[in-house]
Picture 1 (cartoon, rainbow, N blue to C red):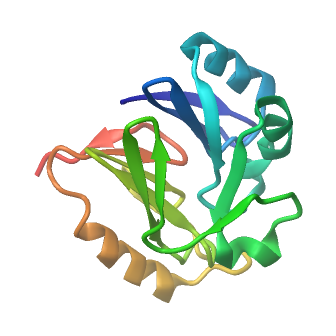
Picture 2 (picture 1 turned 30 degrees about the horizontal axis):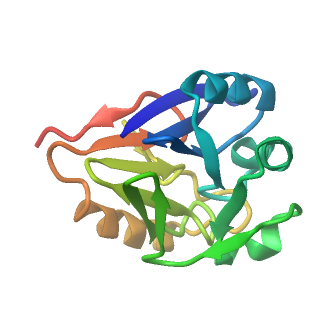
Picture 3 (picture 1 turned 120 degrees about the vertical axis):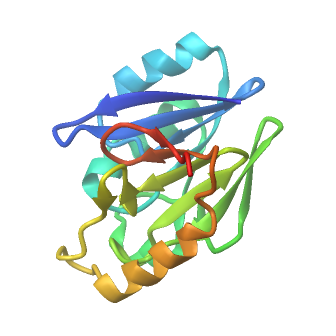
Length: 179
């Protein structure tokens, strides 16, 4: 398993390539589809999924173009259904498992920043979108945000953020849980 970070768009959003064997997933393609595709080509993998951790523009802007160019399925949580204006191939829910190569990412529903915000938990990795960052957590003052729901989501994540886990947030540097 390998993770590559590609910073895209005006808001410096982290887009990730999650690679396992000959397959990969693109997580949060916020913009710059060509830049993302250049990285994908270097990996020589088949893109199986395009996964959006939530529906804010800076995490989804390149989803349609990447679907067209890769044939990958676009995934987002079912609570984001009313907030997206692009074709979604599968709406996710809590505990869904997404298999890429020999690796599996499990969907953790973490509302607060948006109603259908998710994290993707795998072996020694977690992709947190805009739920949690190295020095804080996601905003709740935007439309559809909820501080109360975010507090509950952070409590849920506390059980997953064990020593040795690398956190891949939607913005800023990835970091490892040490204690």
